[in-house]
Image (tube, rainbow, N blue to C red; front, side, top):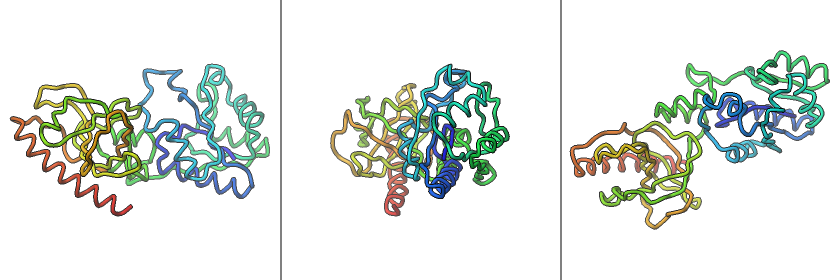
Length: 295
């Protein structure tokens, strides 16, 4: 039983689709397989329009497998694959290579060269091949149909609460702790400066969240952006782990976002900034601690 798609973010709509896939796979006593592309075809066809990813391919595979998927195939995208017509893709990939017994897809699924194939054609091809086929309707959050694009839009606007609602879990990024200017340490709020982040970074501002290092969770106050108080324009991701002490340079740090506390501000001097940081850290500690306690 196969589902094909990008599954970026593995949001609640994806989760319903995967739940349906796994149920049918168990009923038919066959593996539940997710077939995705690496990289996404848009990177080859229109690289200038490629959106930033919500998850790495490894993170997607981990979440999909936690939902009961037996195998995640990250198919290497090349021009040969993109030149296949819809019918050729169905025959060569689904029938010949995967020997699929059935398919589960969303209504906005397109396949084949120039996205010529849709779910109507896919249903016809499955019927001709004697395959099971089901279309899972979109999932709605409030007035919005959940999609990776909508999740991405909310994150880019700094609305992490809305993004988390659509994802069904906290949005997270991961990076390596590097040396920064150490202004936070001088102000009494040492921060971990994150580099090498491969996924979408939220809008500039101050956030409360949870930092995870070596499997241990800590309430976190996160600053994203430049530092106008000190005339620094370079965008940085700085994480203050509340209650943590120790050196973590060179280590991987995962950051989960709860909500934005405020936008980026310019302060009159270091003391004014320090006073606001105290408020930010207290707010982050209160909100994140409650979340951690509920888990």
